[in-house]
Length: 474
Ligand SMILES: Cc1cc2nc3c(=O)[nH]c(=O)nc-3n(C[C@H](O)[C@H](O)[C@H](O)COP(=O)(O)OP(=O)(O)OC[C@H]3O[C@@H](n4cnc5c(N)ncnc54)[C@H](O)[C@@H]3O)c2cc1C
Ligand SMILES: NC(=O)C1=CN([C@@H]2O[C@H](COP(=O)(O)OP(=O)(O)OC[C@H]3O[C@@H](n4cnc5c(N)ncnc54)[C@H](OP(=O)(O)O)[C@@H]3O)[C@@H](O)[C@H]2O)C=CC1
Ligand code: HEM
Ligand SMILES: [Fe+3]
Image (cartoon, rainbow, N blue to C red):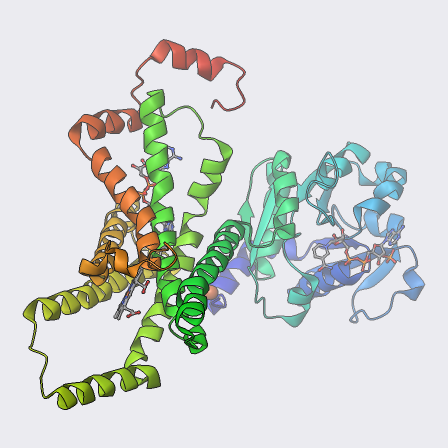
């Protein structure tokens, strides 16, 4: 995060200069109230605290007054309520004092959707005459105290009174936050749920890759370690260090990459089937579509691991031993293996395809960085993500297909009827590519394009559906 420049800061200060002289009141001298109050004080606001025990509240810089809640409320028309929701009751007694004032609700809950209404709406019910603004709940007390705001500086703000919201956003800006207007007080619930979420969009990609990882691991163990041990009494356990990871990781990368592009195809099939784009997708598909970025980044991480593991292949003891024993065998038999151009072509081609695929993979990753995606327009971004994304999938699939080469479906590679792992890894990407190939054929592409431009096959029915009460209809 960059710090705001001097110019920006002074701009913010100028914008707020008429408010900076106004006093801000903070109810509650707990962790958050104290941090926010002290920060505003440092930034030039005059701050007064309201407390149950004004005489006991120490630890405040000179110049900050601590008064009773009633006295403090009289000193300002903007009051930040730094109190837990469970203790809001006493505010009803101050209702008269708080009439027409701006009350800033900064509270969080312990659980998502803990109460039926948001804390801010509850506050609005308790003090009907006040102008309620929800703000600052996404900022932590610790971050405010430590000065360096290392997590997000975004402070979501919402409220029904525009002027009140503007005042609160000005305060946010002048203490170094980036206020984001989220609309009316109805948005409070979402804002309150926000800090309780833990990487929501990463959950599905991470669980999915963990599950696939376990499956691939068991599969590889069966084929590469247990089978040779039982059939030939060979100890291949050292495969656990490099060989097996270098089968699991590329397989995962390829499958997760295919799963990034599969929901777009399912969406297209659904839209073609329904003949409209105005029907909502099922929730699972919606969620899948929304976490494609995270899915893609996890895939990129696995591809990166595969590349690292591949780089060390020539220095592995096992590989060097295999090479030297081959040479010794040739000497023993007094017979050199002839150079095979086809094999050389296949081997160079699959590595080249892998390198090109990986290059585009990294390019996708780079364009997903906010600092890069902010500099390209919507069409450019879609071009990279969608067109180059498919090209990446084609190259990586071709890399694996050519690597498999002739051995591919030969029965000799089956162990306990199990084919090599790359054969399994190819099922998903090949399916996605075949479906995409079908969808780009004009007989499907043309109606799909028209549907996406707003055309409806059966507009009467879909209008009914739009007006109808179906929860799934927009
Ligand atoms: C390394 C890496 C990084 C990535 N980073 C990002 C990223 O930063 N951001 C990101 O979004 N994705 C990211 N992705 C995921 C992926 O590249 C994009 O989601 C990509 O746009 C998917 O392309 P698509 O052609 O399948 O589908 P889409 O581009 O979604 O869509 C195909 C068509 O469907 C239509 N469509 C899409 N959604 C809807 C909808 N809800 N309702 C109606 N029509 C719809 C569009 O009009 C479009 O014409 C990343 C992937 C990887 C591998
Ligand atoms: N801590 C954090 O990082 C963040 C906290 N928040 C929100 O800020 C609010 C305050 O949190 P925090 O400062 O951590 O909590 P604390 O428990 O540290 O402080 C709460 C304060 O509320 C006041 N209070 C008023 N009535 C009561 C009562 N009946 N019982 C107990 N206390 C009462 C007290 O101040 P006094 O003794 O002066 O009356 C007390 O110090 C919460 O709603 C929280 O969700 C939001 C974002 C981050
Ligand atoms: C710099 C880029 C790359 C290089 C140099 C490279 C190289 C290799 C090599 C040498 C192998 C054979 C490994 C072995 O003998 O066990 C291999 C296998 C494979 N690669 Fe790559 N690769 C690259 C990128 C990728 C990418 C981006 C993907 C997919 C997203 C991928 C998917 C695979 C798969 C699925 C296999 C088969 C694994 C198996 O089952 O053995 N590769 N690659
Ligand atoms: Fe930054």
